[in-house]
Image (cartoon, rainbow, N blue to C red):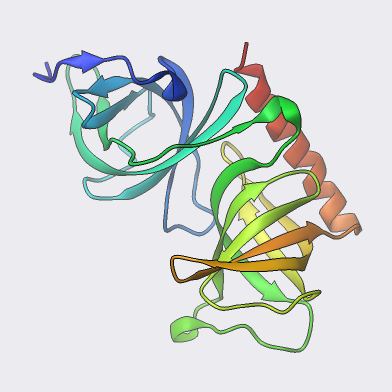
Length: 218
């Protein structure tokens, strides 16, 4: 049995709450449902209920959940795995937790690894020959925020491909650049979804995902 003294996490993280885990650096990474069990001396977050042993010590993960009407997300590192009295992981305690009120129809924090391609003629940089990757930072039914290492021009159209937590299939959407700012050396772009058939199908799945998050809130 673990020697750590277990505390309930702060209210923002909830307790005994459903949580989805995914690798932070993966593309179309699988989503692993789990349960947030508590914290250890505010140094680790404890999660259990995973099927198998999908993660190794040192891996960077993204955790997402819904609590008290909020969509919550944070990044963490796998610190260790305990087998007794049942298998459970120790994850690093987050430095910060992003939270957004779902019931007000605002954007939901996401942090989704994303493949990016341009609809226009200008090519995107491909580091070491690999497809361009970005991160969707938040989502709504009208648009998203996209983080990239290089800037895009206003009104450029892009195709984004990513998977939602708990979903095996990828979503493909067409977006238009509407704004740009810099943060920590990255370019954060405001994107608006285009009204085409592929995007409408993806937005239907997105709305269902948001509704499922809301089911976990009182």
